[in-house]
Image (cartoon, rainbow, N blue to C red):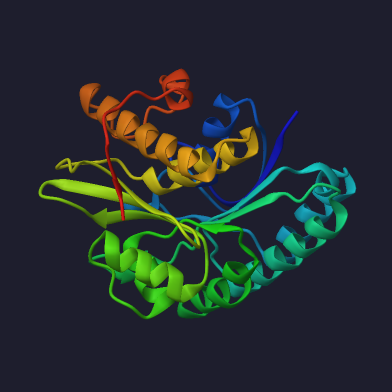
Length: 276
């Protein structure tokens, strides 16, 4: 039974953050374990005030998970939102212990949640710095949006080619979300040491929050399932397009992750694939 550890936010009523990723991983028959960094009733984008997990509590939570031997058999770790730099340090220490405890090397997917265009940075500067300094170097894959990749690399990211250049300058294998593509399109850019691919689909006027969380979970699930990274990225791109279109069809303010669980695993949404 595959197991995934998620270090991110918990939001009760909105399909975003680590709570949303639990549903995605469960659809793929991967057992999720969530250690929340902050808890909300609904999305902070709607004005909700959350309760940050105090660093001693977060450390104790991870120690309890470790005591149940989860660190020894976890297949996937996803890191997402952090509210405090101290939480990032605790997460980095946990990743190091997980790798030391596991006989099989788990996949580590770091979603460096820092900000987005046009608002820019929306976490504390010291949190963004800690994610860049401590978590990104520990990642097997990073899943930043275009703004976050530009912030991490110090290079502008305006299209697929510039996303590839920025990821390679950073020296990390990446799946980059929200990359401007062709006319009326938005793209997901896959980039490893040798291969780069753009997966583009129609840009819609409105899309629910949480697409980046869906990408990280879907991509990580594919890697655990043994898909090639490129195919895992393509399936994640199709899953996002599928979920966004379903939300529009059903006039849902959130991604309907549970209702379309089977379609997330076997998405059929149309995307354009371009080798970069």
